Length: 294
Image (cartoon, rainbow, N blue to C red; front, side, top):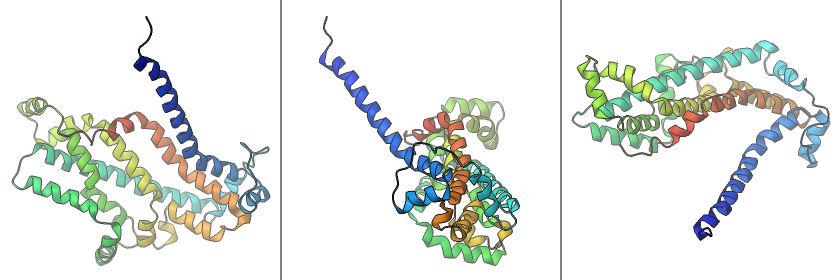
């Protein structure tokens, strides 16, 4: 019995789809490959690739691994200590912001999904409307507020707002929690759990896909955030990696130092790449969670 026309078209569609994904993957990974190769080249080869457009090899003939320690030594005013200070500041800020965003957004999302109160729908719509406000609109009022509170040149302006929720992640949590069967919530109430107990013991463990995507997005945004630390952190001791990298670019941004600049850039990207692969499964599941109507 011959296969139907639809069945015969399936392999062709599969090959075409996989080919598109392969080409798209190559295009997306090309900038990272280019950075890594430049970071391992000699200064002359790296400069020639930018100025005269010399074609880079797939991998350097003799990788200059010492470019990485050389670059890290130059990123701070006190050799290695400058890099590790900026790294520690970035880790502290990123972890606190990530924890604050997950806790606050999940709690508010749970309240919108499971607690019925007058004006709740209107408040939810107003919260969603805040996503339409560009950050430039609130930048000056927030700076004046934090200056009045005496928080300038500390991590408080970067960390404290995270504990008041994020509209996008609140929406995702609300949509996910709304899908949880009501019988599970009622059973928890019968067992004596209050709203906080239901949120902490039941909803948070069930929301692993949304929590993963919240953690990944928040980590990447906070880790790479340049504008916030630039505005609120004025001393070198408080600088994060993004600010330190920009200072390094201003000081060593010439063509003769481009290999060092790329080496530092690769180092700062490693935590984001590791986190994404570690939470890849939950991340992909979470992408579709917020799109399901509760």
